[in-house]
Length: 313
Image 1 (cartoon, rainbow, N blue to C red):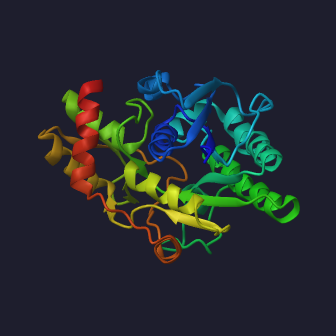
Image 2 (image 1 turned 180 degrees about the vertical axis):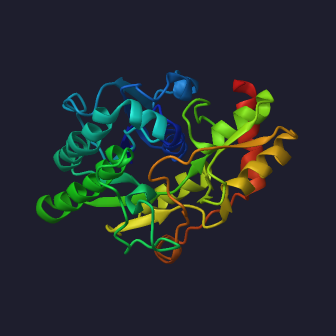
């Protein structure tokens, strides 16, 4: 039997590089694509001698015609995902969520591949429903500073569903909640690398607001398992992929102190505009359709992540 082949866009990024590893472990061939704006070759350097992996440094907003031959799956993880990155690259973020996603969909149509979109919990905005179900339409400020990312992903979902309806492309849509683990960038501005790096360096942990806002953290291995199962399902509407274990940001900061073994102070900074007050996925759909739920406990996942950050610091 010939090997199956996946094209993973954003392959040098945090989640994308872990997906490359998973597909290779499952016996697939993988073509990775990344323009390295926020990804890094360090995340895939361990694959330099892997004959079933090839890498194309390219912008998905350009042509993907260089990808020829049989393709069984196209997974689109090509977008800045942290506030620092998408605020620094607003137009690139809007373009990759529109032009880039359509180019990826065209590739899937041309090759007859299944298309998986990495959407986000940010489509729910600052939610008025808690926990968030896939049927919730969200509370997004379309002209706020976060809109370049939030609305890009909402458009990405819309064009993905349009290709399903009108072009008969098989699609999967994953709404990813906060994910953490090895290969996150120390400077990407998200709460996990920021708090851990500060604690490891002996610096004060800088918390936005009073810390009462909540997040739910899913370890990257669990996230990848959810993606794998979703791709191999036949379900074409959005599915939340995240961990329903909810923490306040203050609770998370104290957990970082405990797990790092540091008594650095926790200090408050002004809360950014449109920062979500609550964030927790309802994963009933994932449980029922995919038989999936997170397995890695918070302390275990954080210990693995801290060990990786210790090497970077």
